[in-house]
Amino acid sequence: MSPRPKLNRQLKEPPSVTGFIPINGDYNLADKVILLFEEYESIRLMDYENLTQLEASYKLNVSRPTLTRIYDSARKKVAKAFVENKPISIEGGDVSFNEFWYYCNSCYSSYKTVKQISIDEITCPVCNSGDVSFIQDSGDWPYHKVGKNHNYGKKLGIEGNCICPKCDKKIAHEAGIPCSSKLCPTCNIRMIRENTEHHKTILKKRK
Image 1: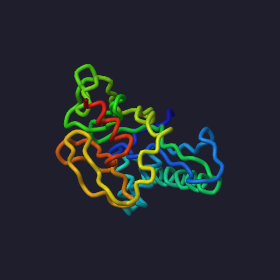
Image 2: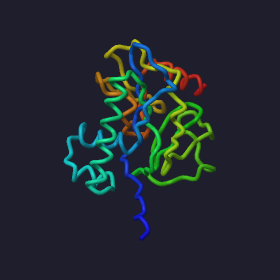
Image 3: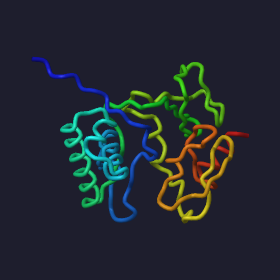
């Protein structure tokens, strides 16, 4: 009897961060804990949204026993990273999204569209670059190139604004909630923190 085919895990949207590193202490970026996208999503659904296992399994498009295994693996990995002072990288896995997400390799903006657009036809709505990647149905997400050597929110404190990199719409930053987890209601583009290096890079590319 052949094994049952593995279903793609269904994610609402890409995570707003690529991972986490310890604030201090000795750690090696190469010696990281890899948290799969479906493991990240299981924690988001159950511990952040407080869904039941049955509700979370339906959203992730897996059976309830499979969700239990994914969630258990995720928590053990996070615990290992905390106790052993290891970086966490969110990457890999068999996933797909509910919407069509794109990423600009030039200005590092990520955004979604109502319908899928061919890579040959799409340009970044922020900087007009043609170097755009389609991140639907892919465990190797290109936006993980960003953030490894940058700390865009360093020493900004809790004050300030989140800003849309395209239309400059601003909303007040909320402590503990990354600006990248919010979408501009007009442009469907992930917002960024105002006056960060990321923001300055986008302003330069506009010119």
